[in-house]
Length: 264
Ligand code: BTN
Image (cartoon, rainbow, N blue to C red; front, side, top):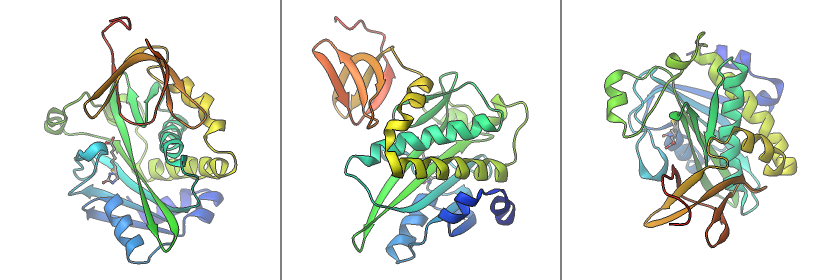
């Protein structure tokens, strides 16, 4: 990967939003690096991208295995004025932006899994980890994106769920520089729209891409299990679940397909 190539592929809007690009051969985690910089007072909006991570972070305390060039590992750090319920919508928006960017690069057949996984034929292609930092009364959001490009077979076996990568699903594999820039351009353009009108203008596109819409699912949240039929997301990005006791709006947890009938 090359910083100047990424820079040249960025849209005017992305250049206006991102003041700096930092490219590392290796870092512990691009999210952790962005957060350290915020804490040190280095708060200009930036992109942190790495060819490998020694301690990549996943959601729910998991790790994100990140060998050299097996994936794209990137974090966008941006200052935000946030409404209290904005985080959820932004995290869905990031997944949607990644899906749309990949679509634009000719990679189709992608689906979303609430809140923010990207799937291809039910296998995980990418994940998103949003982290919020506050400093001197300002809010900073770190949008961490991990996209599988060419996972070594031994790594695939180590991961406890079905995974896939760009190499397995694309006919023409775009260069990583182009992938990074296209994702940034899509995300920045969607963030501008989001700051104007929130998640509601993305609700429909998100639901059209939802791999579990109208399916029976189980939400696992800690010890709690809720079973119901997924009705897609509402205008804030909460998942609407039709359960035997009525409609519930879900704000956290992980989705699994349900094999049980709702009446059980
Ligand atoms: C998930 O569990 O699905 C989220 C994975 C997010 C991984 C990315 S890789 C770049 C950024 N830096 C990290 O440490 N994590 C995110």
